[in-house]
Image (cartoon, rainbow, N blue to C red):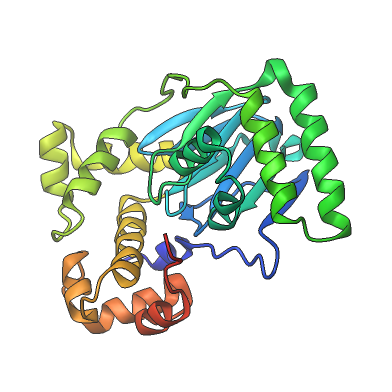
Length: 286
């Protein structure tokens, strides 16, 4: 098995005593599927590419806004010709802390809860027509955050302002450039517990082995088994935090036939052993 999938991992966002972090800059693309333990807001200011999330592919372009809930797998691929012009704002938010601040704002409290649903669906919006307002809002709070950690009240105000500018319901944006990747991703989500068979996958899609393998790599930039192991690690993390199952039970539940290999793979992919992960990342109270 190719070991490159080890780059597919949970990216723990270290907020320390802060409840939000800002990153407003030109940046490299994250060329692997990953997920975070907190809510991520991605706003594209310059550059073009593809965002893969929820087994769908969306065009990434200036003015497009993405909300990635905790533990939702996503990947950002910038067009090679736009690498030097990819500018984005990324905001990571401790949604648990902010929800406490919004208790007296029931409508927005409920809205943030939906956006932050663990493993929930991403929200994708076009906000190019209000770019000057969003840019001004993010610039103001980024400057404040550069001087000192934002308070819960300040972060709540930031999100109240942002949500107030956005449409109430998620826009039905079309999937684009889906090709073979979307049905493969859905199939893997349904069958990740079983031993992987490219023959079976190809037969069910009515395509040849070589076509499925080649097209998936072309469309997503990675191999099928890399994405499969991303799913398995995410599921394992979820079981570790939300169940009392043993390590061997979890290994079997997520598709690893050998518990020793599972522990090794988890350590390489996540950076901790399963037991360390369970101990070091207790689930916040709901």
